[in-house]
Length: 257
Image (cartoon, rainbow, N blue to C red; front, side, top):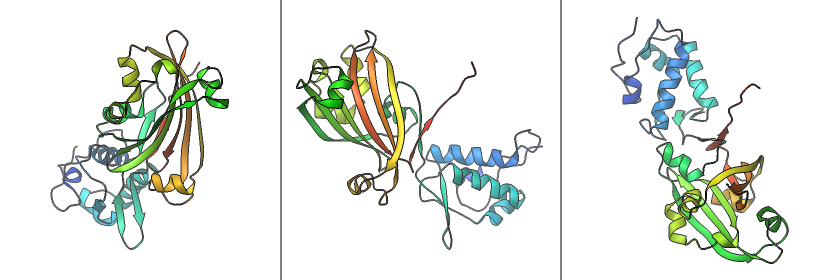
């Protein structure tokens, strides 16, 4: 039997719309957690929303307290809410979850319903040496385009993106880079993206990086390096990016052989 939608107290209209199906094989805690996760990711429960205590929420939904506690712990583990002693349980900015596919962060944010905002921090020609020349497969001293951008969503910075492009693709301008994703611009030039080699890691933020990403000193960062190839096997860009791990994650789908 399906219980009627919750009608009464806050914390939010999205919570009041929750209908629990007690005949479903899906665990009750997971029904609650998934409903709230969807509402948070869609912005129906905005960052900063303060939930009531779990005992009151459990009573309001007609659930046991352990069930409600488990649902809220699921959201804590996903990085969607935080518990603070003396304050309560509050919604934080949801973590951007990015699939490991040949897409740009701009595309992924737009696809998930978030409005990406880009600030170009640097756009310059520079001579390629060492790792840059090796990654782009150009001779030492050849001028390439260096792009450094700060990408934000929901008024919070998510990543600093540094990309290097070979000479044949070096005619991008600041306005285009602040309104479109890099891969979108490359496709507009007729580039057919085919594959990429990518390395993911982690490290602590420098003082400057922590300030830029609005993170605590020495916060954990996710790192990614990617070399992208077109359908002719030519390198079209080398990117080295850092992400605020409190608001960003990679999703990996594994298939059995």
